[in-house]
Length: 203
Image 1 (spheres, rainbow, N blue to C red):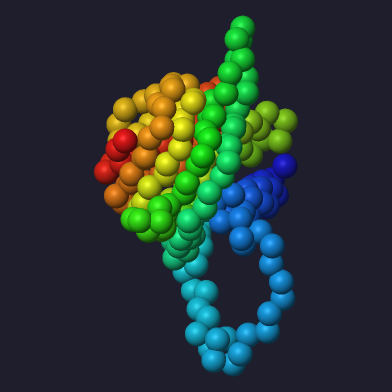
Image 2: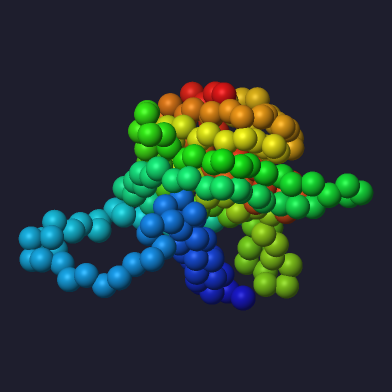
């Protein structure tokens, strides 16, 4: 498969994952209807610089490339409650959940919404231009700046919070607070599902 076709596949995949992520982060957006915009509303719509798509070689391993779609001007703000959230039931010989949360709150009624500023989707590929050996190593959906609280009973949490890594750890009932650091959800071929909360994030 040539490079142009490979890019089309990546664009389709990342676009689909973005829509799925927005539906998770803001379920009210997952049901939409058609509404006519007024002339005034249309005149205020600007799309320049909305998104960018790049494929970047690793720089060390020539077999590795990173495909990234950035939505630099997109901001999502939400307060969402979820009864239970579970991801990644696997393992050998004992199976367990990478993520098992209950009583989840994205955002807070007291401190405000959870805000994702500058969304992106990144995929790490091995042999991206060779259709016979191409392999997806990980897929990440994230933001360059996360602000707000995520509260839950974290029966199992896999990921990193402010530099500390927790592998399938029972954190108990906690609030993770992010004050503007990076954030992503990663699905890794070898590591399963993990969350990354960057600088400024803490329990």
